[in-house]
Structures are given as structure tokens and as C-alpha cells.
Length: 72
Image 1 (spheres, rainbow, N blue to C red):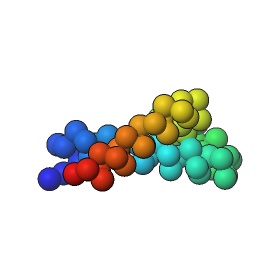
Image 2 (image 1 turned 90 degrees about the vertical axis):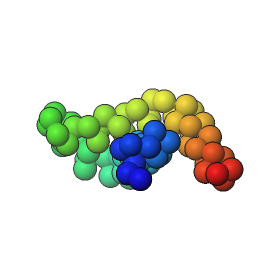
Image 3 (image 1 turned 135 degrees about the vertical axis):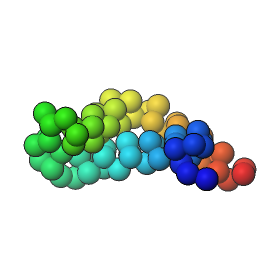
Image 4 (image 1 turned 90 degrees about the horizontal axis):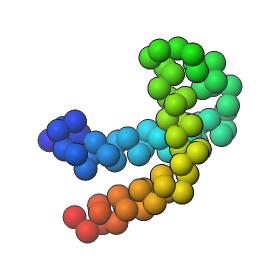
């Protein structure tokens, strides 16, 4: 089943994107900063911001998803 049709898989993909963009932004800030004002590529900068500002909530969501995967 595709991740687009399975809500749990869709959440996992979104969390992975947020965590990946946050990591990339902390390691190489200029990589995402130059696309901040672009329409299509600006979403990665926004995901990095969500990961930075909502870090405890994102971490908790990642832990909950890991526990959910482990129990399945």
C-alpha cells in the first residue's frame, strides 16, 4: 500500500522529512537558506523550521512512531 493512502505511513514520511531537513539545516545552513523564498523548494526550509522550533514535540512524535512500529 502506498504511503499516501495509509495515514500511519504518511505521518512517518512527514516526520522523516522534518527530521532530515532539520539535520541538513544544522549541518549546512546555506543549503536550505538560499531556497527560502522559492515556492517549491521553500517547503524544505519550512520543514527545517518546524523541526527546530517544535523540537520536543517532533522528538516525542518520532518516539511514538518508533514504538508504534515496534508493536506492529
